[in-house]
Length: 262
Image 1 (cartoon, rainbow, N blue to C red):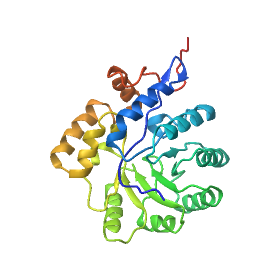
Image 2: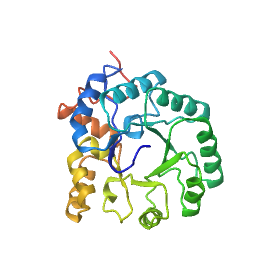
Image 3: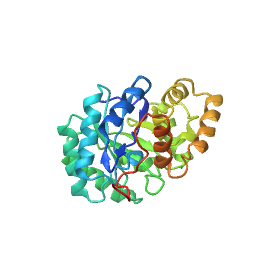
């Protein structure tokens, strides 16, 4: 079973001249690998909701082939049958888990959704709490914790009291699920947080690793400065690609499905 501890990186998806750029992804993985605990391709930072199924599969396959570290496949699809199809593909390609966005904000519907998914797929599941849709109560988390296939939560809800309550439960040994912080400017975390799953790890993996190890106020202040510098509160994946391309870590700053394809 995968262990969710440390810094996990939601990889950007490099494109060049309208095509998935596997060589850039390989180079990026090689440079990040010494400083991260695992890789999460095709999540929001990887523009997973915009990738075609064939590009999604290519990204997952390259990531899995390039690392022995855990790979958690991001699956961002609106329809349940599409989610189940890609989750099955992730299992076939040897991924260690999938991460799925919470589909709505009604906890009864959330629990029903994940019960259905858990019965249909073979991989462990990480919940992705977003600003748009999220579980907001520890009672809701308790209900989801009862689903054995669910192993953790990436919380990007911006609901700090909720996050702190999860960490308190985790620290006290009263929560089975691993708890990961999903926002860079909130990395000064309470005891009980198991790690980070943050976009900044694409650009500053060593600094993110140090922050996790030291939980330092000084490093947190440095990261907050970088949060604004890198535009991580805006269209962050666009800005990250530009910085990565400028550093020659990837070949191009193109987005998925660029408007102009030569």
